[in-house]
Length: 253
Image 1: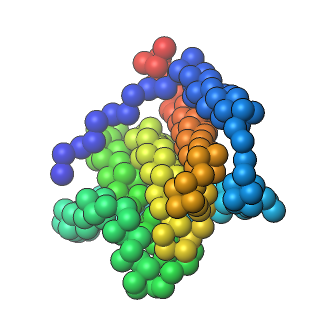
Image 2 (image 1 turned 180 degrees about the vertical axis):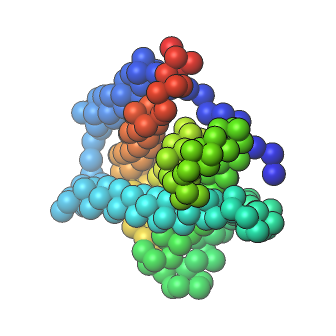
């Protein structure tokens, strides 16, 4: 497996673009709704807190699936760079790649066949679809560490766990966080399809707008999905900048 390319360095100046995009989407949606006429079907689809419920379900699906991806992918990536487990790396990466190669709706459908329709099936499908970027970037980040630096850490008496926790993982943080950022954005998009397996989310509004041919419902669901994707990308970018090792700051300026 060839190592992943180093992620582009992020500066605070670049982070101003995403909030501006979020505000632009929100403003455009608000202006459109001001002149839109809502009939009874549209009002019923958007009434009784259904919008906030769908938005919360979407956030919940994204947060839980991403957390579980981190719990699975980072420890597995560490394990696949240790001793005899290195031989299993091609197999593990091939399995993770197979999940990404399958269309997201197909992964969700297979999950629903196995677990039945509902949130569990949606979460499993989202995890399978998003595990590859975090896993591959964890492995690539740990493999990219300078062997001489690791040997020096061992030479001053650090234990293997000490070298991993105080040297290897901190140096691999930029690549790992880039993978987490990718997984977050993937999960926001995949959560939109969770409606097809009974998982809820903003996909409920989008499908309702399509099936009833009500443009206000469709546009609201789509706009909220876009805003959420931009927002989580911005938050992940902030985390990527904050947790980046200090030695990389000069390169980002």
